[in-house]
Image (cartoon, rainbow, N blue to C red; front, side, top):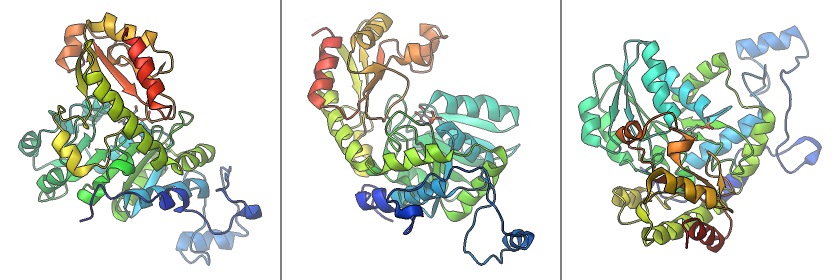
Amino acid sequence: MTDSRRTITSTDAVHAGDARTKPFDALPESIVQTATYTFASTEEVIQLTEGTHAREHREEYGRYGNPTCRAVEVRMAALEATDDALLFSSGMAAVTTTILALVKAGQHVVLFRDCYRQTREFVTKTLAKFNVAHTLVEPGDLDGLAAAIRPETRLVISESPSNPYLTCIDLAKMAAICKPHRGLKTMIDATFATPVNCRPASLGVDLVVHSATKYIAGHNDVLAGVVCGSTGLVSLVRDLRDVLGAVCDPHAAFLVGRGMKTLSLRVERQNATAMQLARFLEAHPKVERVFYPGLESHESHAIAKSQMRGFGGVVSFIVRGGLTASRGVCDRAKLARIAPSLGGVETLIEPPAVMSYYEMTTEQREAIGIYDGLVRLAVGIEDAADIQADIAQALGD
Ligand SMILES: Cc1ncc(COP(=O)(O)O)c(C=O)c1O
């Protein structure tokens, strides 16, 4: 088994999936902006259908494949060290299509509770409509996972680190618990980690998904998602994606591929800045608690240290004074902009109680672990000193 912390190569981030020759001898990948592909004759259509076409690969129709998208998929598979990868129109398209491809009525999934709200809604509400049962397990609780597995369990889903408390799950142990169960697959949403910091497949995880909207594309200007895994599993997901149709647009794929070239540079900077901010916040009198896996005080610190190279660019913290205080920090921030995303070059800040859980009462939010004083800070690549000065003034220093 390879080391999940082994660095991705920046060379792969720049070149993997790169076609040797490109139209007009252009250096970057071309945007093949087409909905369909032409055939010289009906004979060629038959050759493609029968698998006897002279070319190793040719496209047929835009929903089934696109060279710009394919280049990104190959690069992504290289970065996650998996056989293959599949691109989608958004992170949620990747999450939902992958889950749907792996489960059917009468089966059961396990989801770790601390996760992106829409993923939880999909599992608890949408899957329930199709008679797929679920069990929610507390963040990182592997005994809870072992107890939740039933003969009909087909999928275990977790984020690592999770949103918004950055809980990391012991991925090798999770995979080891699941492996003996026939037909049971594991899926990790590694959006917050990126392959720069952790490669779950190298620890035995079956499928790795990303909201590529975040660090992978990295510029807050495009939505995309990706799933990485073995040839067999990815082709299973591809078959359903080609039916459901949540494919990535070629122009969006170009932006994702361009962003990926600087992935390690950006994430290394974001790791360092977030670590600095986490230490600053931990020492701040107006801050009650900081959640960052790089801090010794975080419950996942030991696990994170053992399986991650860096701890990511998101720092969550609880300010004293509840909702008024968390909103005040976000409203006073100037460099950090209020927006519901993360992983891009611009620093973003949000109070989850307002941004994602506003319709609930304080008590309802607390019941699912979302505290009114919680602030999620997603650092960009600006100078760390400027971000820290902005957060300091937002806290009233
Ligand atoms: C961990 C995680 N997974 C999935 C998603 C969904 O991704 P997208 O917004 O690209 O659909 C998000 C979005 O914030 C996320 O944070």
